Amino acid sequence: MRSRRGRGFSLIELMVSMAITTFIVASAYKIFTEGLAFFRVNQAAADAQTAITKTMTLIASELANAAPMVTQPYPEGGASLPGIAFATPLQDGGAVRYDPVNGDIFWQRYICFYFEQDPEAPSGGTNGKIWRVTEDVDSSTEPLGPPGHRDTSYIASVLLATTTNNFQTMAGAKRRLVADGIAGFNVELYDGTEFGIVTGAEERAFDITVEAGDKNNRTRDSYYLKVKSRVVPRG
Image 1 (cartoon, rainbow, N blue to C red):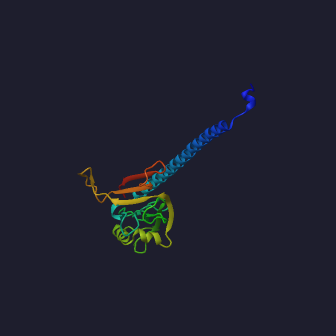
Image 2 (image 1 turned 90 degrees about the vertical axis):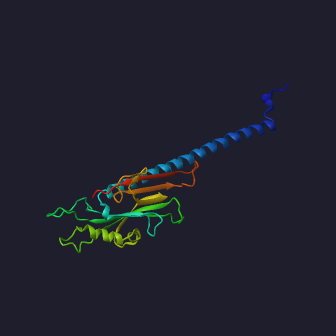
Image 3 (image 1 turned 45 degrees about the vertical axis):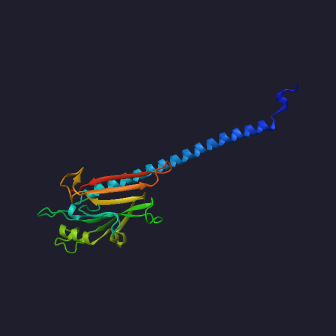
């Protein structure tokens, strides 16, 4: 009898071997592609979380120097872009100017954070942007001269007449991108209640919400983050 080693493989054996090899390769490729997709989703979620954290920290740190009467929120769904505008007593270098007689502060700059939706998806989308705009306070009517203005009522009246849409198109203002890949941005005046209990903090605090990802897609191929923070102006 001739040995099996000399006879080689039959056609059926070759076909079975190829089928097994194909199955193993296909399984390995599927595991690899799913792992790569999972890694990309997690990396995108981590980047979005970092962007949200930086945005919240920046807004909170700057808004803390404002005062409730010189802070104007623009909730989503209104005629203006979602965002918030306020005045700060800090100059570009961080210095604060005071009235030498009565100690009143001089409001130095207007700061506005506003949200632009994803241009490819006007009704939503996940690639929106949050912008920061600054504009110097007009000192032409300040008796002591520039920089800044002491009259809080005057500053409040300017903010009431200036919306986020105005800041978006304001010529000469300093504008920079704070975060992209954002799905939503909303700022609302806190109503002063917590768990059904009146706290008396209305008109002094603001609820800020930033969203990233697709809230309508909760599969493993997507992510959704929503961070909400309450900020109280202390200026």
